[in-house]
Each structure stands twice: as C-alpha cells, then as structure tokens.
Image 1 (cartoon, rainbow, N blue to C red):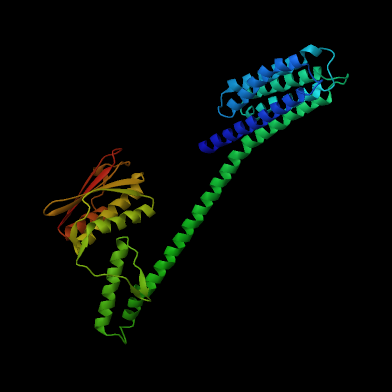
Image 2 (image 1 turned 135 degrees about the horizontal axis):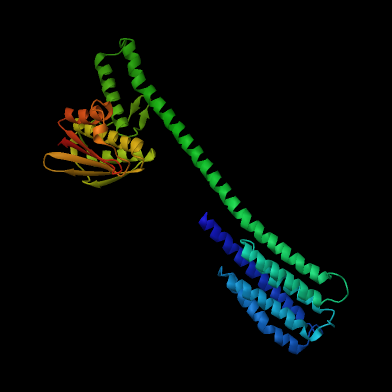
Length: 387
C-alpha cells in the first residue's frame, strides 16, 4: 500500500505540472496578442511567469509545500502585474487572458492540495484570490463575470479531480489485493483437491487393491506375488511418510527403487519441502550428505518430522533450524526454534507423541533423543542415530 500511495502522489504531481505549464503557456500567448497589454507590462509579467513555471516543474518532482506556495504567489503576482496599468479601465481581452492563467496555470496546484486541512486552506486562498483579481480585470457590473466564473470552475474541477484520484487509487489497490488473495485461495484449494485425488488414486491402485486380495484370501493370486505386492506397497508408504511424491508408471505400478542405504541429504530436502507446503520454513545447516541404512534412516527422518510437526503446531513461530552433524559412529540432528518454549517438568512422562514417536522410534535402532526448553526461550531437540 505504501508503494501505491507513492505512485498516486507521483501521478498527481506530474498531472499538476503538465496542466499548470500548459495553462501558463496558453495565458502567456494570450497576453502577447497586440492590444491586450502594453509591451512594457508584458515584459513585467515574464519574471512571474518564469517563477510560476519553475514552481510547477518542481512540484512534479517534489512533495514540498513550499514550491506550491511559491507557484500560487507567482501566479497571483502575474495577475496583478498584468492589470496594474488598467486599474478601473481594463481592456476587453485582459480578463479572458488572465482567466486562462488563473483557471489552469494556477488552479493546477489544486490537484496536490486536497490531502490535508492545511493544504485545503492554501487551495481556498488561491482560488479566492485569483477569482477576485480576474473579477477586477473584467468589464461590466455583474456580481461575477464570466471570466471569474470560469476561474471558479477551473479550481473546482481540478480539486475534484485531485480528491477523486487520491481516494480511488487506494480503493483500486485494495480491490486488486482482494482479487489476488481470492486467486491464491482458489489456487490453493485446487492444488489441495488435486493432491486429494492423487492420494485417493494412489491408495486405490496399491494398498486398497492389496487389502482387497487379502480380504478374499488371495484367491487366484500366487502367495509370492501377493508378498511382492505388499512389499511394494510398504516401500510406497515409506516414501510417502518421508514426503516424496511417487510417479505412476501405469495403473497400480509406481516408480519405486528398492535401496538398502539412502543418502540423507536427498531425503532431508523432501522433508523440508513437505513442511514448507504446510507453512513452516525449515533452514538446514551442517553436513550435506550422509549414508544411513534404510531402517535407521526411516527412524531418523520420521523422528525429525515429528519434532518439526511439534514446532509447527505448538511453538507459535513459522521457522525452524535443523543442524546435521556426524562423526565416525553417529549422526546428529539438532532441531531448534525460537518459539514460546515450555517447562520440562510439566511434560507428562507418559505423553505418547514425543516418548513413542521420537524417543521410542530412535531407541529401536540404537539411537536416542534429548529435549531442552524453557518458557519464552524456544525449544531444542537433539536426535542421535548410529551409522
């Protein structure tokens, strides 16, 4: 919104400069017509026109109110200088020429004088003073001459245009933001629905098909084939738990590669992407790639994922740091967040989540876990598994 407000102000300033310079130029041409003002009077008005144009150019570049005040005063001085020799006896062409200067050259500043009370006061002063000066140069006894009315109209139109632009640009920006927000929500809903459909097809093609065969006692299927299919399903579920997205090759067949050892660095990236999709930014530090036996890797990554899930759900922050180190016998992961923390004494010893999903799982493969936390100081969990 701040950037849009700056662009709005820049638009108003440039529009005021264009309209003001154009009005001053037209007024100067009108005054140069023979018989409107004497040549010496015309020369006296030129410095004030120069100051007016300089102020209009600077208003197009700066938001300083000083340039606006200088421009209005220069324009009023030009109006006074042009009619000074004709006090009481103006020429017929003087008032129309000066009305162009007042209604466009000076009134252009109204575009940037609607945003605050102080600026509105300057706007009213400029409009009243320029209208009175044009009225003095008018012939006839009417309360307000046609040139004076045109000056009032010029100030009103530019002020309304400035106010409309100032009010409409933020509204348009809010609508654009709301449209973008709705688009992002629709896209997220579409992606979620696509993932749900893919997951349903995945389960239908694999696990549900295997369970159906088992429910019918595997009639018509060799035991070895059934065992192989169940093993394939187990590997598929393992990849899903680790955050991977297996690619289907054909109905019921997915791109799975059986491995006895897995590279830790490649699987950590899948865990990072998984939690990134759920709104938790995970920053990795330390060792890039470590080879672990498949069973140890499963326990290590699933425990790590459980710790990150606890950060996502309970810490109150959206960022976690994972540092991976290793030595000759052990791989360690330190999961750290700067969230709300908690009292360790207040944790139930029988709490299933951390005790079984982290400590129990790691101990089954010869590893261990340690927990450090304090209220307001975040939480740190150290996971260890043997190589």
